[in-house]
Length: 143
Image 1: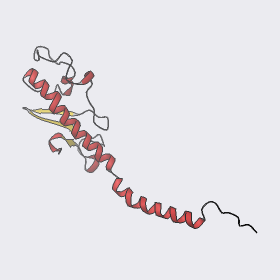
Image 2 (image 1 turned 180 degrees about the vertical axis):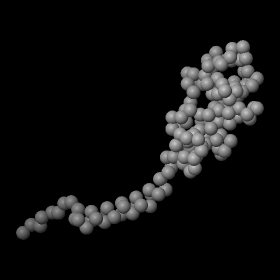
Image 3 (image 1 turned 90 degrees about the horizontal axis):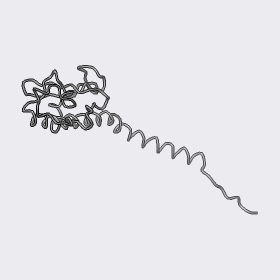
């Protein structure tokens, strides 16, 4: 009499694999949760520093001053006053004249307080203030 060959897995073997996968997921998931928002916040800091260290500095080198708060970052895309800024770069200070937005698609807030520059993102909640993941992100507070 020939023995039948058995193929496939038994129910017990499948259950053991499922339990092991569940345990692995339970250990890994907590460390991954929230990393997406943290990455977005870090990217916003990089964007703000890039705007400050490249576009705003080039504007100041060409024109002798930073744009006013009223002119905002828009002054880096289009010359707000040809008489005030006669050395304005013909191509502007942003690639393709597009003002960058933060990770959530919001415009950055630009403040020039007598030469002290601050760039702010309203964060995930798109509202002023907030705490935790909804907190505003200020360039001066970035690492």
